[in-house]
Length: 247
Image (tube, rainbow, N blue to C red):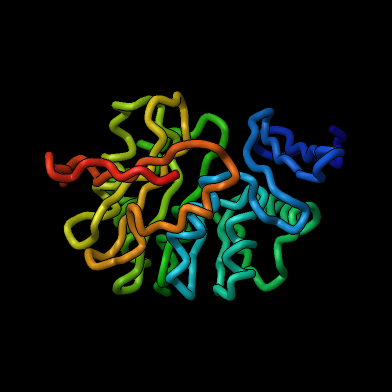
């Protein structure tokens, strides 16, 4: 391993570390491992590939949260129009210099809540991957913020969010997804039961949306040998809706 760069940032030091053998680059913020990707920006995290697959039907995507910018890079290289919002301008510089963030990605320096409050345009899809060290998702994504997210979503669009689930009965994923889906979207959670403090992906999608459960392209999850399970948001979960397994 070798250090490529370190930067002083508002939430702690950002460090970029490269694996000498594979060339993979890791992004640390305040000592927390946030991202890992190839130099061209392809993420080495399975959850990022899962988010990219769930956002694939959209053509105009709003992403909240940058870090290494891998999700934005992967979507832009698929031909999407991508707007990336983060309150730390240094993240954009690091993503461009070390992780191949394309110049075509529109980068907006703003607090995501302020951006949502001011923005009037709507997007085909909204991706949320905000995981700053010590972040409290319940406080950041309260009912008002979730309404603002929904207000920027075009008809028949989808919202995909990465969240940290503390344990199997952590109520946060279901509570936040219920607010994002409300009554007009269908809520699904992609999760890895049994793991502590794991990534879980929330998907609020149209009721007739086809990219769910066993139809998800499993090749996108080949990076990590983990088992992902897809279930309904518990508010709508009945005994007939048993989890599907996505490997």
